[in-house]
Length: 202
Image (cartoon, rainbow, N blue to C red):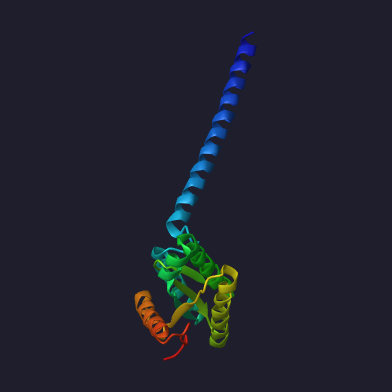
């Protein structure tokens, strides 16, 4: 009788242990999932799925370390959507949001290998990529401009962008300096009525 009570108690303890273990596993999974969701939300722009501005500096630091080790350069493209306010005014903000989403995706799809796109401002993007073959980057840059031009037919909206480019370490070693140079080239391209300016001039 005593043995039955003893083994019965042991069985109940075992069941409680299994139950509590399962609860702890479930809690750990939920907490881990929540952490991943919070981390994702803190790094990614919810509209375009590009990285947010804060992440640009972490990405650049990572690329610089890799570029220095592998004797690579880093191409930085500053991309501004032309007449974006007019798009919102004429077609509505929903259409404007779709333009931003499609441009973000199109830029990424236009370049092969490692690359990162950041939503820098409302209608501004920064794309960074390491490279060793300058000719290949120029060709992909042209491909990007062509791919963006096709959005006009797909969205039934006249979509163009102005692009300025800078190169690490040729034009600077700090992200802010490279962005300022690329931004000035982008403004020059926009004022000249062009959709792009040479990525590797001077």
